[in-house]
Length: 368
Image (cartoon, rainbow, N blue to C red):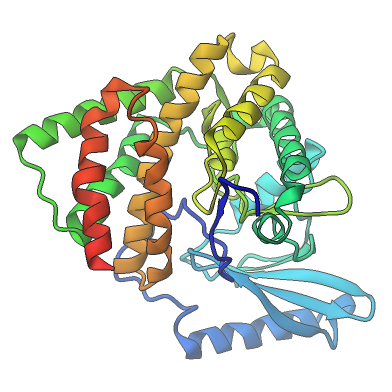
């Protein structure tokens, strides 16, 4: 494996970082074995009523950090994927709409073949089982070609997505600040017991103000919102296959780029990341990025990463405490490491980096 690359252990679940709206205490029907079996039986009955899927072999494909789970449906005639998204915890309509937008852009996303919105079932085309993360883990020498394809698809999404982005919810100040609060409330407060005194609270609010301002002054584009190695599939044609797009928003130009290149699950040397980022910027039309300079772009990219990584670390802690999914805690040190490495480049991050280095990371190690 090349020096300088860190690849996380591949778990079987697909992390969905954007599940910010589920109320605490809601019973998870996927973790409730009886409810899950009842839903699987209902799904089988639906498939049996449709000739292409009769007598199919149905096997688990994946689950994620939300309430959704997926099954691979195989017959002699072909293979499909069935989504189980139990109402009222999940709403299939955004998935259906955004899948259509991506198809209209010429991107490789699952097509919706069958819908049962009352029960929360969809049947989708099957993009296969070769996940980007697994491919990078097993064949890191393929990274250049995989990232070339993923970056090209992102350029297309932002350019061809312009007619659709106004139909998406806005990535506005309220949402940005809520996401930042996840780090303070769930990781620092709930998990580590760190109390914010008046001085730390002032420093935290100044940091949040800076990060929110950086996001809001960027050009607005079609944002997938979770465009990373767990949600991209290696496909033989029109690579990559794009998954988990149902929470797309209209938001900052650099957000999806940060998700891809400063991935919470796989880390590359800083110089390589910056090279990929500049290549993306140079491939993007000024009408999309708003006429940014290269220096302005890199600053926006790095500060956008800080917002995303604080959000992700907070969500990982919440998944542990609220949802009983502790495995994501292992990804927090890597995620916060991206922020620490910026300490010498952005003076406005000094207080945040001190908090992470002196209290958060040692606290995580002590609690492990």
